[in-house]
Image (cartoon, rainbow, N blue to C red; front, side, top):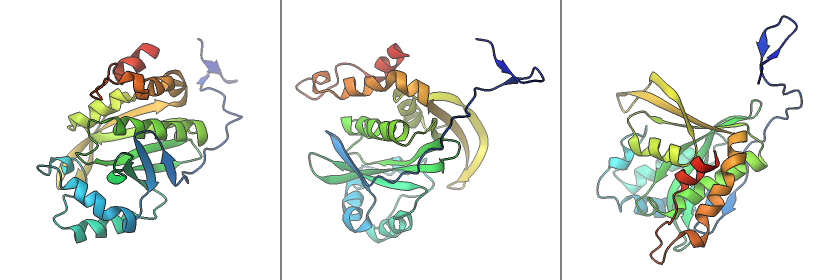
Amino acid sequence: MSARVNEYNQPIGQDLSGWIPAAHPEQEVFTGKFCCLERLNVERHAEELYEAFQASSDNSNWTYLPYGPFSTYEEYREFLLGMEGLKDPFHYTVIDQSTKKAVGTISLMRVDTMNGVIEIGHVVYSPRMQRTPISTEVMALLLSYIFDKLGYRRLEWKCDSLNGPSRAAAERFGFKFEGVFRQLQVTQRRNRDTAWYSIIDSEYAVFKSAYDTWLDSNNFDESGYQLSKLGKMITALR
């Protein structure tokens, strides 16, 4: 397809004269089959979250984050109090539907409604939700909210370039790798090169059905093991 050109015969981008800015995240609760997302509430969630993180055998989950680990409940609670109520980042607590207990946190952040760009960040999952259908359903709920309801054009995922599990998760969820921003941050008194990933609205429209197919009960055996992999489904649709 040939590029659009202006009156000076210069190539220009797609016409967006009908573009309507996206909406700011406001929804307090999302309900799924495996999990529920609730707006972070320290009074309701702090103790359960701290307990869930204590289930880890070490502090490796905090290595690539700019905060933590927290040595006491009081220290963690003070941290959450600083996050509660913020509009950006807009923090959610992940609730396991089978236990009704808080098992992790995630946020929508760097909200740019005028350009339709938003980021998923502060992804902190306890061992109680890692490698379970919950983490995939969280993404399904947020992707639908971001693109179908709020009207964003671009969703970003950024992580330490050395964080292999986060990079693998981004690709599994359908994000495309865009490159590494070298020496972008100093965090935990270390250099951080940041890997950038994104999904744009037209891509999501193509593969969003893969999430529904993966989360369907027919995709799991009697032991709860997946029969088809989400990443392969997304690749096939693309």
